[in-house]
Length: 522
DNA sequence: TCGTGGGGCGCC
DNA sequence: AAAGGGCGCCCCACGA
Image (cartoon, rainbow, N blue to C red; front, side, top):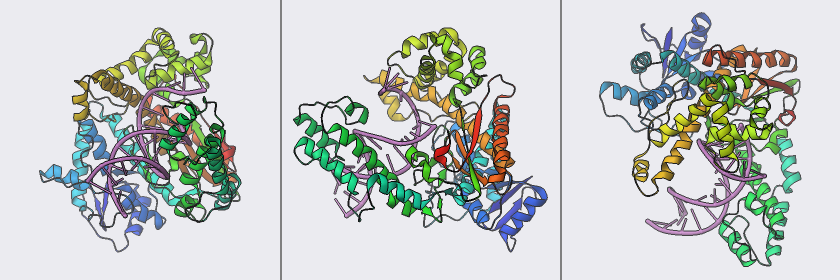
């Protein structure tokens, strides 16, 4: 049973619309009685006010996300995908420009009428049914929509963040919080050391000034990337590397960041479901997916609570093994340490096995990669061919799809021009590396979404998902629930694997640990 | 003064 | 050890 919510209207599909006096209460009652699949134009917009009223729902169909998936499948990646745009397209009307949906939008358009949303839903269900693999795409739509529920819930709940511990950490590393516009003491000291090493003033944030200063000291640099600097013998290098590391902490996750993003002991980023073409999430401000490892100690469970942290081990090669149906690779992927299981195929070296797999999935060519890829081609021909085919499709300007049907963007006009020009080979190879990776990364993202959707349904009250980062989840729960949550994670991983791949020898281990602080995980 | 693009680096 | 894929965000430099 599908029930549309748009504005203040509730419309059971096939029934009559009504405008309850209290929308949240009406949703709560219907959820308890019928467990419908809720349909709305935009999950964050509609679901967040419900969450604020303490209403949670089990399932939904996000019309905009689904439209985006369908448009991409149809080769129309990037076309306006809002419910409003989809409805206009359906009626043959001019398609409105996409409005930015960031939280800060002042003049958001009126939500489309419930009837319009219902029309778009019917159209979408029809388009899905006509696909060659409707079952897979239905799973994709369900997982993407469940992801939208989780994202809204995590933004609402927030990740536990101890502002006092954060301040202490920053003070320890950088010195006390400076007045506005100043560098913290330890950062300034490092900047001074860099200048002293050159014998004149240099802004360590300026690439140009640094390259010039090193040139003056007889050191030719192409870039000032830290790995290149590490090879340079000059007294400025050590303080400069230290400066770069701390400057990043200060600017990206410092006091100003905390003032903006941490309230009431919780960090509340806005997640963007499907924000990455491969289906990974992005964030809109807050940098939640780039929290430096050194900062993990700041993420602490409340008193009497625990953080259950779990990440999927070697997810991408396992996904490749399952998709390609490569028996040899799938055999290795039946082990907990996939790379160790592959080592004997690659001269007994686990490290070589890892390089071979990563190079196959990313299109690597450097160092020993080509030699190791030749071994992979011989030992694991189906897996090798699977990513080669994806790369070839990309080079030829064709579309590739993930396991469930998420589709990469078509090549741009610019790319088509470039590819027939003198630098064409380079452009073609670049796109080949992208599509090669897309099929793997996209399917890994689908597995993770499925995991999230299942896990969400297994969690006991009042446990809450509070973080999700590509292949890693974090649950905040009362201490006494930790064991139950750990078991739920394993169960969800197994169920996600079954949902995507059915019976497969490939295992997707997801070991969860209960900790007091994020930094104590792994 | 503002927007944009590149360099650099955090995460997976 | 780095590189090969995907991002967001900071800063600087530059041009309108």
